Amino acid sequence: MAFELPKYHPPDFTHEPLLVSPQVRTEEVGQEGVAPIGFHATTIFPEYFKIDEDWILIEQSRMDCAVVLKEKKLEVIEQRRLRPGEKVIVGRGEDGEEGIYVHTTGFDQQSDIAEKFAFRSGRSRETSYSQDYDKAYDLLRHEKNKGYIVWILGPAVVFDADARDSMVALIRNGYVHALLAGNALAAHDLEAALFKTALGQDIYTQSPVLHGHYHHLDVLNMARSAGSIEALVEREKIDSGVIHACLEMKVPMVLAGSIRDDGSLPEVIVDACDAQDAMRAHTRKATTLLGLATQLHTIAAGNMTPSYQVVNGRVRPAYIYAVDISEFAVNKLRDRGTLGITSIVTNIQDFLVILKRNLID
Image 1 (spheres, one colour):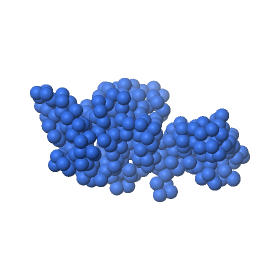
Image 2 (cartoon, rainbow, N blue to C red):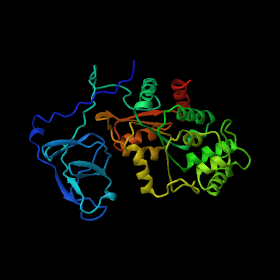
Image 3 (cartoon, rainbow, N blue to C red):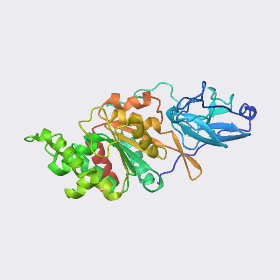
Image 4 (cartoon, rainbow, N blue to C red):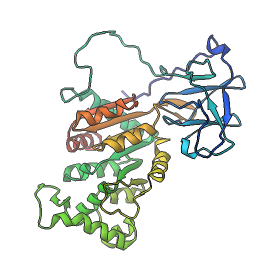
């Protein structure tokens, strides 16, 4: 059976109390980067604002941001980017009493079983993920041509030859529309291409090689000498790996720097705010987000991604996956407020190989 997006059920604004809700209030920004006192902060859910008797839905949201009103159009803006004179919506009520309605039940599905007490309702190493995998296959097949799939990858993805090859296959077969990562993922992927190692270990046997701990440092040096990652790939005739596949398939990459980086590749964005803005360009249109073995980066991207997107005038859910061998890591994003998430506790190498086998082979 073909995958179908769940139907969105908008609020009924023709009945009280929403029928008699007041207009939203706004206050002008007085100081650059500072929101007015009592400003409304966005959530992950669809949010409506009453403006000139109409309820207007935010079409591109992000958690914990301000809402700026521009001629009956709503724009979600980070506080640091607010400019003097902009009109920011104020009010902390979310049930319509201040012209603001946060709709938390738009995609609710009726369950046949309403069991108040049940075992194993959390997500842990004891959870069976068979159904999650099956749903992921169907979702990704649908999203390949009808959505926008964003991956957040940690360096563990390229530490193993089979996992790296599986990720490359997913890229070349259209299952990756944007890649968010750090310096390490790119550096070790290029190391694998040039030296067949990652962090100095053979990517197939996992055995350390002589002077292998120099390899990623040599890669950084070579890339900086070449002037760019693309120039390095061309100069060294690199023809394998995640970075090469993204360049080949013209998949956009955002590489965000870290305080832990030992030097950076030329394209790595070392300013945190600039990196956030570059990531936001993709999360604002992401319909599926998959974070693999990178806890903090996944939390960052997940917090920028709402639980819904408006595509061709239709409100649809955004799907978020967190995959890691650590229970703590996959549940951390849910704890930070990103509720619409599927967490899978597994080895990243196994996850990618299984995904590739079922989607491509």
